Picture 1 (cartoon, rainbow, N blue to C red):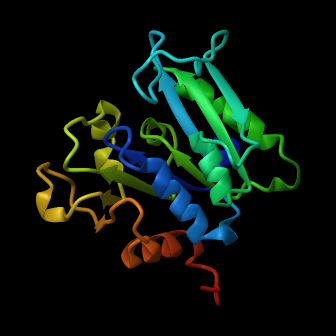
Picture 2: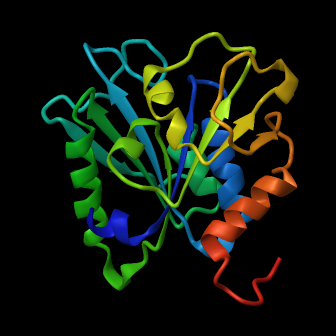
Length: 212
């Protein structure tokens, strides 16, 4: 679709909330500043309950199926603020009703198409369900064996994952996962060398002499 389809897209999903999806997005932004990322946090909600934390909140778009905010405060406490603070050229927060993600994606497309200078060439998005609508350059899924919850949206697209980022050692994983590369990284640790190499290959493999 439009600008999203024309960009190199990195999608970070995860089995549940609070397992470090945004932390991974921020680490990837810091690790590859030359990508000049546009970062997008996607939240789906329904029945007056926020998909972000399971509680009633005011993040819902009350009048439309989707709403989009442009983060401007890198010192804020929101996930999009963390992305901006990590070095994203732009950080957006897209909220959609459950089952209306396609309309939200269209809203995002219109916003990106309106940018002057064609600056959106590398997108990094936090979402599971998005991979049902686009074919990302790379789809990473964050898993934590210590967490019992497993989002249906994550299970549904698990076969689409290019690699897993495990918040606990691999021998503790109790699920039957597709045969994909898996990198163990506790929150706060540096990006594993193998994961760095995978991102570099997919996003910068055709660029000679890339600086470290």
